[in-house]
Length: 83
Image 1: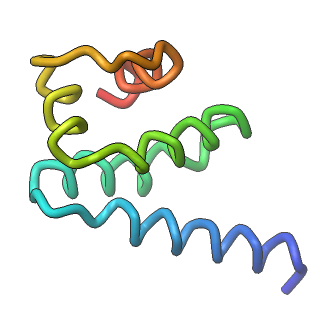
Image 2 (image 1 turned 45 degrees about the vertical axis):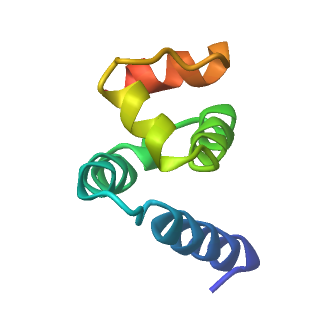
């Protein structure tokens, strides 16, 4: 196994752990995205996804339910793609 493969595996495991949230609704959306779509992202989008995972659960739920708009335009665009 190459160093890049090991790094990618570690990154995926870290992201998988970060997708486990305190709310089932968030777990479902984030884990489904990680499992089905993450591998198709470019490096910039992968960085944005990691940045999104730093948001608080209550904010993520509001963004996903579209009851609150994310003030970060890059994250806001990514959220639209994720949903």
